[in-house]
Length: 176
Image (cartoon, rainbow, N blue to C red; front, side, top):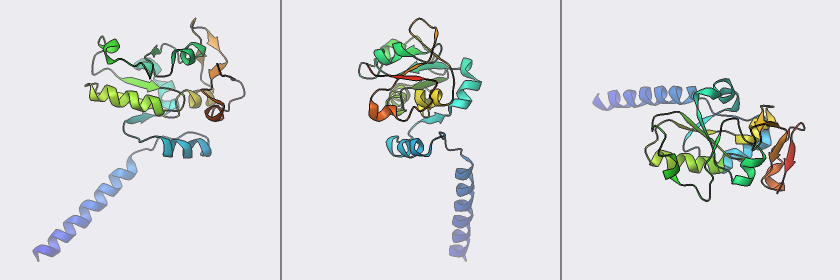
């Protein structure tokens, strides 16, 4: 009898967990090929936020750009702070409250996911990775700003291989 009760409990608990898991929304991008790339490239080790959600509440977040400086200077999200990737230094963010909501982004989301992991390891509690990052932001038609904080139609494509995932024709890809 105890074994039967235990088995019933396990089945019931498994069904509850399966239902809860299915309620968690998987972040998505519009392009199927881009979605496949992101599913293989990213570990999904941190919270992810979709571009539409960020765009609707952008003023509620500290934005951190984890690309290289030359990429950031071509274009970035309005108000984003450049933190880099290769030369990222957590000490440059000591002014931030560890509970403030932060969104990191890069070209596709790989570098920003790694920066999010570093932030979390250093006690930041409210960190998200922009799913699809600046390429998906541009693909969705959201505005980008240059080094003088003026609207721009340019996006740094990182490389021709990666740039193919930024496919909004109103934006010009730059490779320098």
